[in-house]
Amino acid sequence: MADLKEFAEQLVNLTVKEVNELADILKDEYGIEPAAAAVAVAGPAAGGGDEGGAEEKSEFDVVLTSAGGSKLAVVKLVKELTGLGLKDAKEIVDSAPKAIKEGVAKDEAEALKKQLEEAGAEVELK
Image (cartoon, rainbow, N blue to C red):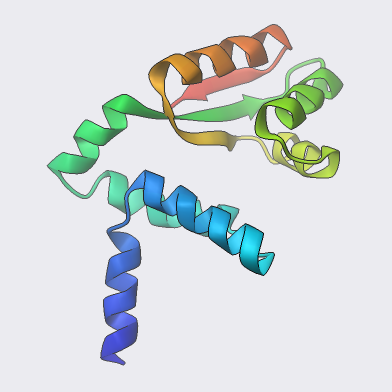
């Protein structure tokens, strides 16, 4: 039981970058789409201490809050920006508010936000 508790503690203390890497490994090697788990683990790690606060200022999450009036254009753009398939991109848009990209640099986050807003979407940077 102590091993599971230690494992859980390691998961809670992961950085945003480490959570993204873990999500990629789970998806690529095991076919598991851990979107909800990644957000749950990233939440406590980001607010955990002084290091998390400093990291959040240099890394941003691009969150789609609404598809707006031209949903099809937004789905196509999300597909293009994320490299996902059309079905996965549509699921992201349909489940808004949803993070499109996590842990990206400020310049990239602002560029993504601008592109999505031009397509008609409502976007937040967190």
